[in-house]
Length: 356
Image 1 (cartoon, rainbow, N blue to C red):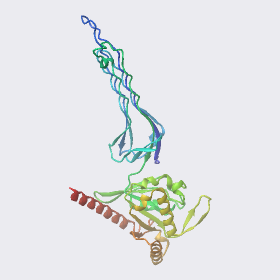
Image 2 (tube, rainbow, N blue to C red; image 1 turned 120 degrees about the vertical axis):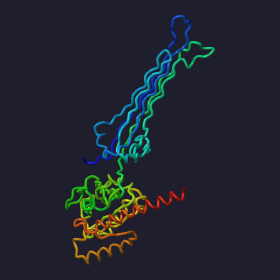
Image 3 (cartoon, rainbow, N blue to C red; image 1 turned 180 degrees about the horizontal axis):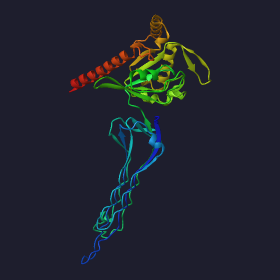
Image 4 (cartoon, rainbow, N blue to C red; image 1 turned 90 degrees about the horizontal axis):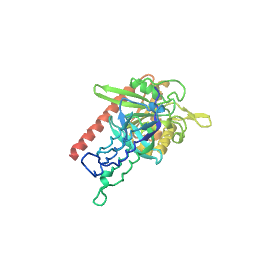
């Protein structure tokens, strides 16, 4: 199933029940006082994260979610029954935005996490609350409060540990095939990846991480050009970025439909520019350079070419030379990635111990 990573829904909480106006009517008890009960509270609407879901496709068919209304109060001081809540199940990694205010209401990042998105109305008061020494027979009750109604935008951000970046046809899908069991479409033309793919890399028993392949980025992606702009959000949560670059000059795709050779260093700078426009914080993440398609050159030529690209960029972070198609050099990267995450966990444990 193709990923659906945005959906707009409307949530309507239940109104509160009305308070009751009633008077006690029993044999042998003259002048019975007020005994109208309160209305029940309206049900609320909740979102709940479920790790078994990985798409928002269900919201294409159902976009309205309502909670139950509270029942009205009754005589003999009987309270109305509260309305039942409505629970909407969404994938883990869903960001919830109020469409009217553009405010981020919440971010569901853990299985079972719940978020209140529309609160039910309070039940009205019955007339038994308004009796006093000067008003023994109040004929006053209050109506139930209205439940909240909101239009929400749901945005799914995949919870991957490693994100793959690169121009179209840089070899990202081939790379994720080489290191995981994921089977994205691979072809010799740009934009073969039309939606994100996730792969689990199992380095050893009880040690694994998730890697995400997103559609290739082109110039202007942050403003909506190409396909990658739709999915840049999916690499915002990642802890490490692998920047794949074709060692040979790539075809640059432009809005006007023209193509021209783009050097590996220019590819890197172009994508850095798009990341900076979309979210400057993404450039602060650890980002390793993976120079791909070394199999298209002689070994010495590929090494010399890679070293030239690294020098031209002034690259200071780790870099690797690989052939994703031949699976040459890909697994050592995965071992190094696992060591990187192991160090992060050790540092977090040390920091927690020092703060105790």
